[in-house]
Figure 1 (spheres, rainbow, N blue to C red):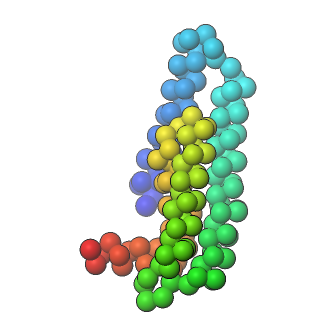
Figure 2 (figure 1 turned 180 degrees about the vertical axis):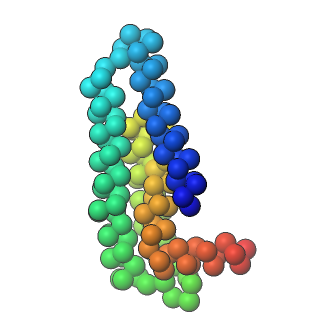
Length: 124
């Protein structure tokens, strides 16, 4: 998980730098735009950690994982959150896949979800 996280962070930094250099090369460079992009990424990370993670935890108390089975409604909500964070990262100028990765990062810290996911992948 640490290696994948480090690779994703490296990719995000690379995309931000690529956008900045591309804008600079086309004479449309704006330090404010790059700062807004980096600020948006920071806000999204903070939002995921301090808002989305507790929301998923609360939902997990309402719809608990039973015998390693994630309730369909909870899975639907988590997938929708992954799509929503994907849309946010796309709007911030980086690939939408990073939003899905971010959703995985805040979901994996929730023990019952990570155990259910591990059981699912091991048994397949």
